[in-house]
Each structure stands twice: as C-alpha cells, then as structure tokens.
Image 1 (tube, protein in one colour):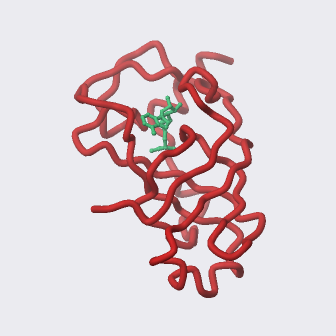
Image 2: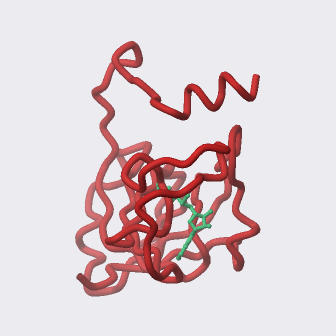
Length: 145
Ligand SMILES: C[S@@+](CC[C@H](N)C(=O)[O-])C[C@H]1O[C@@H](n2cnc3c(N)ncnc32)[C@H](O)[C@@H]1O
C-alpha cells in the first residue's frame, strides 16, 4: 500500500494527543491528498463525516496484550485501539468541515503531523445506539465514576 496523502496536524509529539477516559478529539487539521489521487475526491463534500484509514508510521512492533490509557487492566490488542499492532493501521472518524481542492479540512484528528493516509471512505453509521456494546470500556467508565 502507498500513501494517498498526508495529514497536517497540530500534534508533533504523541504526548500532545488527548488520551484516556473522557479524552475529546476536537483538533482541527488538513488532509492533503496527493495530486494523482485528487480526482477521487469528487462528490466528497456531501458527507459530514469521513472514515480515515492511516498508517501508524512512527510505531514499531506490537503487543498482543496491553493496558490502554483508558483503563488500568490489560486487554487484547484487537479489543483496543493501540498503535502497537501486528498491522499498524489506524482508523479515525473525522468531521469534514470544508474542502479546498485537494485539501480536506477536518475536525477530530488524533494523528501526528505528517502521518501517511492510506484511504478515505464516507462514514455511514447504521448501527442503532441500543445495539452497541462498549465492552471493557463501559466497565472502565463505570469504575471511574
Ligand atoms: C490510540 S491511537 C487511536 C488511533 C485511531 N483513532 C484508531 O483507532 O486506530 C491514537 C494514538 O496513536 C499515536 N499516534 C498518532 N499518530 C501516530 C503515528 N503517525 N505513528 C505512530 N503512532 C501515532 C498517538 O499516541 C495517539 O494518541
């Protein structure tokens, strides 16, 4: 896989990115799509939210069990959003606030500046809220009060 673009983010270091229970992801940034893929943005403006698939390009190795910042108990990597995973792929739902040619202005980014973007898809949620289960995260939130 090759990058289709790169993020311009306010975050230079991972420590600057909000983490843990109650962390809010409201940071604004720009996703700059490479010229050769820009035509693929046709009609994207109509979507309020996008799924951004990206590479944890500054992470190496993986842990099958780890303790995430939102809990004090360990969980399996596939039950978390850890950057240390066998295939270092990240997924973030962002709000599309505007488009300027091949620049997408977005809100809700949690990636470092310069992160490589692998794909973008429109976000279409079709899971009713009452059918969603939040697993260990719901327990951690309850314990934290
Ligand atoms: C917990 S992950 C969640 C990312 C995404 N929302 C997901 O669910 O796949 C977010 C963390 O990944 C790390 N991170 C962000 N950009 C990165 C990059 N380019 N390479 C490696 N780690 C990165 C930061 O520590 C950030 O707080």
